[in-house]
Figure 1 (cartoon, rainbow, N blue to C red):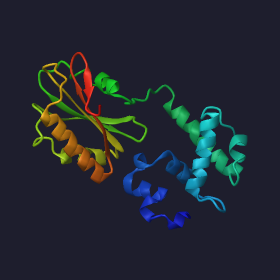
Figure 2: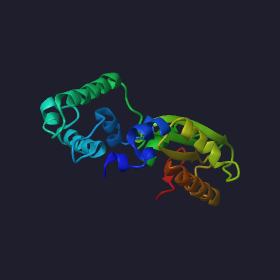
Figure 3: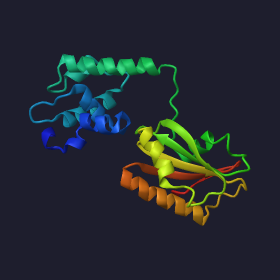
Figure 4: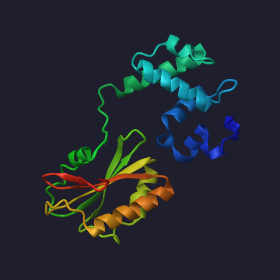
Length: 216
C-alpha cells in the first residue's frame, strides 16, 4: 500500500501532530526521520527494514556502511539516522530509565505506600517503551467503583500523552486477595481504555510483604 492510500490520521507525521510523539511506534518515528520511501516501498516499509538492520547489528555498533547497504538509503539519510542515535545516546548518558516491565517493578515503585494505613489508588502513566512518564495518586481511602471514575484516570493519560497505563493500590491489611470492587474497577477502566486506545496493562495489589497481579 502506498502511504497516500493510508488514512491521514494513521500517517506518522499527522499522527504525531494529533496525538504526540509518545503515541508513535519505533517504525513511525523512523519514518518521520527519513521522510520518504523509495520506488515500490513506502516510508513505513522502508523504516521497518532499517530498524531490522539496526536491531541485527546493535544500536551501539551500527555504521554508515550498514545503513547505506539498504537499497534507496543514501548517505544523507543514513547520516541523519546515525546523528539521531548518537544524540540520543549523549542526552541519556548517565540517566537511568525508569521502566515497568512486571508486577514486581510496580511493587518496587510503591515502596512509599506499602505500609500506609489507608488505601492509595495509584496510576503509572507509561510511554510505548514502558518507561514511566508520571506516577499519580488518584484517590485515598477504600477502593470503590463509584469513586474511581475513568475520567480521573484517563484525563491525565491524555495530558501526559501516555500510550499505556498500569493501575495499582495497596491493601493495608496485608491480604492480597482481590475484592469484588477491585475486579469491577479493573473491568470498568479496561473497557474505557479500549475505547480511548490506551491499554490498561495490569492492576497490581501491593502490601508490605508482596504483590498480586490481577492479570494472572
